[in-house]
Length: 343
Ligand SMILES: [Zn+2]
Ligand SMILES: [Zn+2]
Image 1 (cartoon, rainbow, N blue to C red):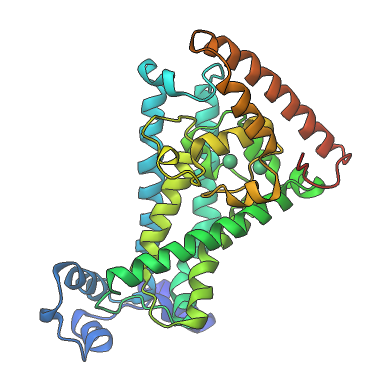
Image 2 (tube, rainbow, N blue to C red; image 1 turned 180 degrees about the horizontal axis):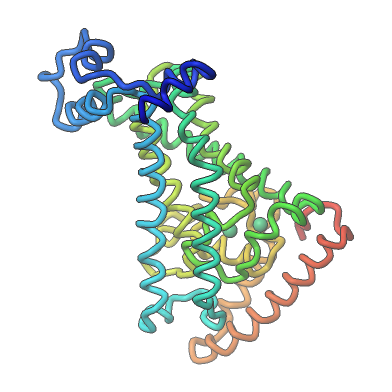
């Protein structure tokens, strides 16, 4: 940031100005790592410390790294699904092969996602470092947490996020909330990976709380959480979200090996049927509360169909489910259903 801009901020918003002032390498090393023997650390930890020293301002360093991580992981995972979508060979594993997503829809989706990332998420991500410090999460500090601790923390974040998302998502299907917020995300009745964050900015903010509140909640009880663990968690969560919207269910998809993993098979049905399958990573909330009964009935009917008739059956069945889903959505928009239907 230029000296003029810094001078302006120092005069009118000194707290904000402090966040942009950078130190030289020696000052940063002394301030952040004065009592740490960096030579005794592993390569990744030394690289981590070098990055923070090079940036000269931990708030800027964490903000930039967090934003870049989100963009690279999100688009890095979503773009391969667009390539897969353009290759006919993969159609055999497409869940709703009859629905075609147009280039105009993909372009609109890209614009909305980028607009939300830059206008809504960027300022919040910039505030991430001070919030982490407030809750006692390690950011620039090295060494990192032991692998076993990291795995246990990430497992907790997955379970917490799934619970949060289930209830928040069901609330978003409630009359006015659906009409004013969640409807945009349901424009895709057969989603694509890129549409994972194709949503109203308020929905992005509400559902992001499930991802980020777990780490902050954890910090209230224990002070051994490092931001690197949170980055690994966010990466896995973004992969899960993009893959759940991919529209493909391969024989090697995770849900075939972990029976309670939701996957695209589960969330695609939510987009098709509208009022079933509300959770993200796991199936246990929907299963326990009966909000996946239509999905299971559909799977049972599918299991009885002969392989030679499967394609025709799926086409007719998907048309019927989509029609029923649109009718259910119409009723919610008209305020005729006051709560999500559990059937
Ligand atoms: Zn929904
Ligand atoms: Zn979705």
